[in-house]
Amino acid sequence: MERAKEYTIEGVVIPPFREHTAIASYEGLNSPHQNKTVALGYFEGDEPARLAFIWEVTTNEARIITDIRVVYDGANPFMNEQKGRERFEKKVKMRVLVPSAFPYPITHVETEYEGETLTIEYGNHELLQSITVKITHGTEIMKTGEEVELTDGTKACIETGGLRFVKNKMIYTIEFKGKTREAELIRVANSMVNH
Figure: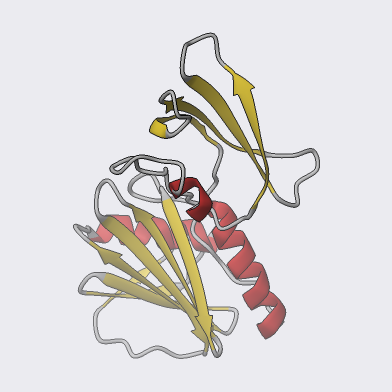
């Protein structure tokens, strides 16, 4: 994508990628519209090839890009979760729980692990909100907040902006950035234990 910037005029924004899978190939197709080309990108490692994006690219007479319109964004931010979770599970030799229910649409997922802690951030960049799930080895949590019971009988502790519980010798901490309600925290946690 850095190379693409060499062919754009100042102010043209190269659309961001929400998935960390590399782009394996590009293809340019002619358009019936003057000075427009359709650009296709394909993700690496998928058979058959998985379409990453379709962009309508407008160029001037010198073939310099003057505008990019996203027609299709094939990125799946949950691929980032899957890859990070699988690396962590291989390291700790345990299966971990991840949420399947969220209080808003997820547009970006970032994972990071350090030592024996996996951190997954599920965000919505338009709403400026995110949910962070931290997963680490352990069997006990300090119970400083209100105790609630999840749908499978697991005891959880709700504190300001967060919830913690222990399941299968792993401590799960769920924290919200932005507005949050207790019911949303419990819904996210229940989606994890009911997988």
